[in-house]
Length: 293
Length: 326
Image (cartoon, rainbow over all chains, first blue to last red; front, side):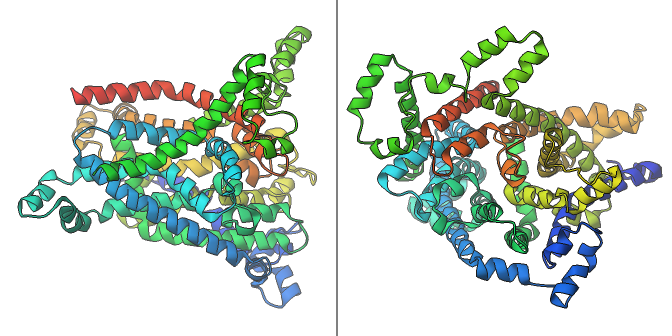
């Protein structure tokens, strides 16, 4: 927009700013509220008498002698052994991202250099996997998995997550490699590199932006998944999200809800830092789909 | 090279085979009654253990599709012949689980998608006017509702609208009704879920629109200004048409996401008041009574449904690609 016109309508500017502020309140308010409330006791966070109790922690002072308490976290992480679920999530997410990125970079590079236009079919596959509710796929997986006795294991879940993720990863890295000029690896090969050396010494140093963006989305898929992990994992080695869901099913006795609140906050923290550090990549990844698709 | 191509594709193919395997079994159900019986006898080993947990009969011919829990043709014709008015018919249909879920899924999708589009565009326009320093933090804050795990996001909102939570208690005060509970009434639950959907998806529309706004050619905007277009007219006749492809992209994504709405229903514990197609499948598979046949039938219906909605999009993409190729 032409900058000279920016200050001509103070009313409009005021209106736009207030709308953005309102949106920010709606967007981030619930998070602040829940993080703050997770350090209180249930009587404050779910205060019937006065909502300000949750801010000042009246009941928390009565019950624990301090206006902040880590009881929820202690209960969730140690008594309910939430740390074990966090460990499981770490394993699942790490391997899903690593495997799908390895296969994605190699496959995407090969597809991009092979000349034939795979892009359409990749896009269609990615679209189909994006459109299908994951739970319909799971209902297909469950039966054979029970037969083969591989149900409930972390490795099975990782394979399924990688498979669901792969068309998208391939498509994104494929279009990313298409943007790296072919001249680069051709000149490397003229200089005597083999195809693999060209990939190793020329392509790998310049591919990191695309790989990081794609990796972020694989991470989010694996981390945020509920349908697949809750169906495919036995209750002994659940990941975080289905575990939180089963917190809800357990009795709502005093304090137990706060365990769930603490667990939820713990699960948000990694995402918070992810957005903090990789905001630019997330935005570019989201818009890349729009521009190219 | 071949290996690089083959490995990932093979993994995808292998995985997709499993779904097709499921489909093959359903096709077996579709055949005539005599043929189906022989198939059961020919293939008993695979599902021997599973049949114990699903004693109602997995190979139920087409009946799985037409029974009360799915398409319910008998009940439909029954309701059609008994109900006098259209409203009676609709409310009768609504009591059938599959149609209830379908109805909610469609309502959710077609209310959330347009709201997200409009809200996202306005927020993008608003943020675009902000000074440069605060843009970064604003985008950061806006991304959070979208990035956060859907189940966790819905839980956070759920605790706030709980009868003892901040919003729930405040609403009780405003309406002076201590028994008011968002969980207890079906319409309020629906509204709550739809608001959650808008909250969750608006950031996506906002980010895409915001990125699009940066590429709007300033020449065209200035030309419109010189021609005497007001601010609103510039938005309406220059920016909106320019954003049309982006809007279609967002709409498509929203349709996909809306049709598979699932986590918020678990998070809000709203299954008594609102169910979606995905939730029905989940419910069939979860717990001890694993109704594979029922879940598979619902899955198939969902897949067919998604295909119908996606077909125009796929045809368009196909045409675009061919045009580019020539």
